[in-house]
Image (cartoon, rainbow, N blue to C red; front, side, top):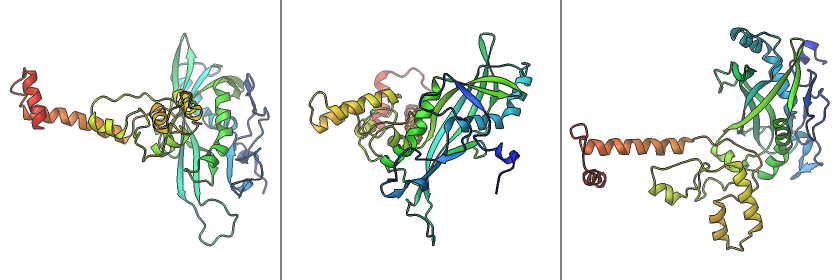
Length: 333
């Protein structure tokens, strides 16, 4: 049945808006609701009928819809900071991006199209909004339950296995292209009768290790390169429990992939793999490195290790122990 106007207003694609400069390779039509996840790609991917495999919102239209949902919060935030509610901005919005497999979604006795029996969801959360004011910026909104499903907006649902690199790239690439275009452009959106300017910062922190490896082009989790944050191998990590730092990043992964692809120094596979530290596919989504459970464990272990050493040496009685003595405690431990 036809949606009522009130219902339509809740769907992306109902609010007029524009981008300055216009988004590259993205239509300026703002009346777009749910679109086919593979729009523009031909017929079938791996024999799956394309029009059934994914549905999504256009990224910019979804962001606009999310902002319009938060109109009241924005005005309340302005009021609570003693700012006029006719401030035009620019407002800076921080977006957390998340993507994860949803497991098995197979039909028990269905007779629908033959599609993969796993699903993947890509979503985003509005984390905070700040507004420029007197050479600084003032925070007018912060999501206080960022991991709640209530503030997590679905952007794309696809029937695909998260390990299927080809299908994942085919479906998420247009979405990533829209995100890249929005990074260097400003949104002009009418809110409360006044056109306001919004800029977006995207942070891909909602990925588990499996997906980080997938989208950043790293080898799968059985790899000798055990870390998605640094270049450590299993052996190095087992010998060094102390010094860890985040060294990997998206730009470097892209460079390493290029090196893996072209092998400029004509090295053997093993030498080349050591040079690129386990990057062997093209990275296609920028994720923000964040510490994972493994590194929390390593950090905790290091801390406990120190405490145990001090307990063995009874440091609370004897503060200025010599280096030799400390070495002895370590060897006892």
